[in-house]
Image 1 (tube, rainbow, N blue to C red):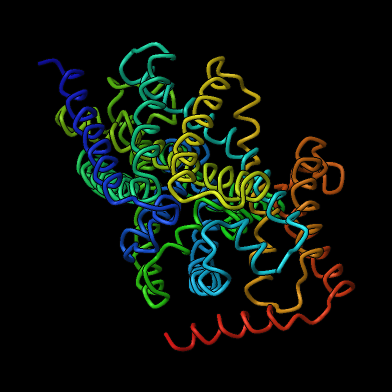
Image 2 (image 1 turned 180 degrees about the horizontal axis):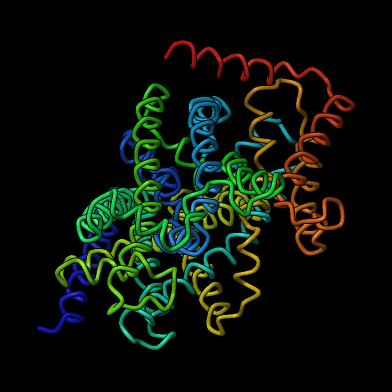
Length: 497
């Protein structure tokens, strides 16, 4: 068999495994809570790795190593910001959100939690947040499909559209039938694959570059500034990179995992597992880029045309085709895990937060599960249609989708968990201001206007949301006994654990 055929065997085994998990999860899904939240039955390991895999996507295995390969360790500031943000998200949000969503009428989506938390009789908060999720995630899913299509195109020479249909078909199949459980179990497997690949590639690579001392000597000979964390950076640049960590508090496809864990107590174990996975994965990514620099300098017979393919190239050169196929499958896993997580959250926004609230409050679980599956299919078809032309505007939107979610939901989630007096009006206007600020700041490049250089739009969006939410809440606050009772009950559950 040729090398490409052997690599395709690995990809085929991986895809078969994902479809089997979808079938297995389908048999365990009987009601809407099962489909949207896995019946709150996830253990700490599955919660931790599924949150990590849903978060990182292809950026971890392609984008970040490519950036460090070109610019050196100065590009690692984003990884540092993300690590700090993820830790604080696990520490502050995970246990409190698990507790509060249980107390607040057993909420199973972020919009339903916000409505129940604020006793919002207008339904505006739930509808607006559902629309924000639907809008951003449709484009987010489309971008993931573009990435998957390009992956197949560049790795196996398929046409762009063939790659698009393969990725879209497989992800939709296991997400549509298996729901949240399938997404979480597949994310767990995908997270393990990503970690193993990210540890083995640099571990084997450093033997081929002569060990640590010779590897770093080679990098210094190429450009000593590659190892300088501050070279070429500015204060605004570092703030922008570190500010990526703020986004974690408002990412629906990540924080929904906190709601699904079996018990509040297990969030502590999940935090340790999740942060361990993240730190080792990020270190593996950084060392893959640095070792790649040394390897391609020492071995001029090999060429690297695209820096973002450094992980792929090293895997194909250093390993047997079967394991090289595993490396490729790990990249595909990173792409698919994020798409599937976004699909299930978008489906829940459509069914639980828009259809059920606006059109049919008395819909039965069986009907809602069916509509949830149809929503996955519809959103995937729309996303695939947007991806058919490989339109750059979709990818441009994704560049600030992280900021959009972080700035619109992040401050509201934090305030709702830690401050009794935030009101539904404060939350609603804060959310709108955060989202609008991100879009206006990004498109107007207002960072250059005010600071002379681009400032990541999540910074002003997050801060303005926070200020508006607090000020309007102070103005509109009226004591609500039901809210006070639930807030105190959620804190009591935390203390009991």
